[in-house]
Image (cartoon, rainbow, N blue to C red):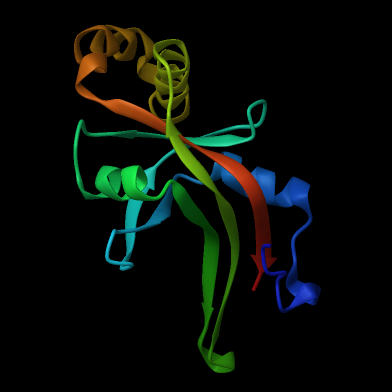
Length: 155
């Protein structure tokens, strides 16, 4: 069903893919609209190893949400630290791609995911972050990409 990485010599093992998903700060979520056009949007995210899912907080409405409603299949790509190698006409970096289906989470899972966002991105401000959630939590939606397949590459 999912295509194997062409360059098997560059393939990461699953534990390294998970590590990159855990430490990455941003990635690109790719969906497809009803006309078949791809749409990639950069997003912050949290990876939950227990649920083997990637969580996103999004606005109440928008293009990506229209796409997910029409077709829940999506991919998410994270790129690790990179280095330009001008003398070799190349770039060295790690990348991880996860494929799966998007779904909106229930209120309990939403709260857990939003707290995970605070922990990942604003750990030094948890007290204020939790207060912020009390006021603003209702203004966003949380979706998860349940990973069906993931791969990574050391390029």
